[in-house]
View 1: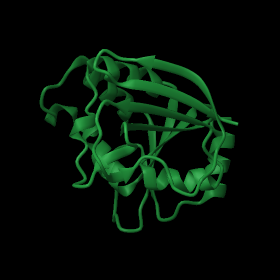
View 2: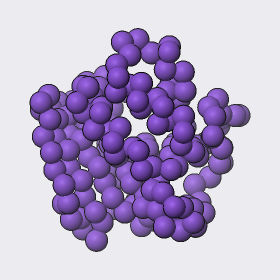
View 3: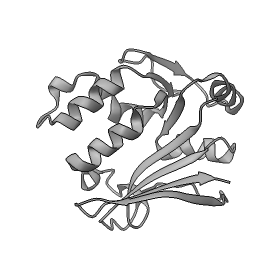
Length: 185
């Protein structure tokens, strides 16, 4: 059985994007990116909402990304070898390999996917993750707190959800980013 893991790079005040929808302030340095890659290796399936999928789909064609680093190349390879499920009512099709499109988030279907999976699953994007939190599907949170306060925007965690968590790992990076890994109780 696979765990469902929510990972977010967020500002100190809890946002994954600012009020203009920008998230460049959260761009990971090489050290953080390599660490994220290591967290991604056990993932067999990524679950994305439409917007997060749009952001992540660039990893299908890494040669088009400027300033390619070794960690970026490694992540692109990881991306291309994992399965992806995109939840969207508006997309007509998906543009990446190993990707299927679902029209609705179905908590029972995700629960069955977790049960049948030999590898962990990752959920990306705060709106989709909120549905998983509300359905009590999230087993782990991997939060990267970036040394920035953005004052508003897209919140990393859903309102109206109560969870007791156990801190199981923490790490500080050279660029001031802090990693906090929690298990749900």
